Image (cartoon, rainbow, N blue to C red; front, top):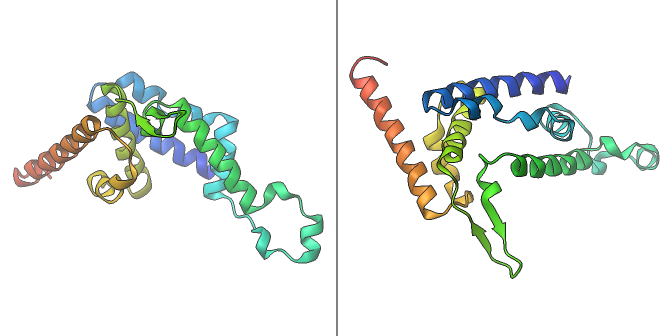
Length: 179
């Protein structure tokens, strides 16, 4: 059942993000992190998108195309997920996309992100990685994806400094015998 599987993932993700937020002193943000994912407008499309199995319109026979309920096709599930993702990033300030302003004359402007939300964003990235793989590969994930992440230079420098510090701290633990 996609809803139970997705609920388990969200709770696991929230736990890992909470622990990261606790470590860096933003406990309240760790508690309320991603609450919007429990709203039906996000929860149902996310569960169906990530854990449901739906047929595509192109895979249907002519007869099926005439009689199928179109709300359960992969294309519709994907469209509903896109809307849910849009809701999510506009409800949660820890997403860098929240801080993008599409100007009326065309260009995209990235607004500086307040420090507490930068911290939560980093905790979110770490928590997502741990929830999915069980390990923190945030620095590598960031390196592989930074060309897609639209940050101003100050926010990018802060994120990269924190990721570098994290790697140095882990090396220090390893060499001191703690790891």
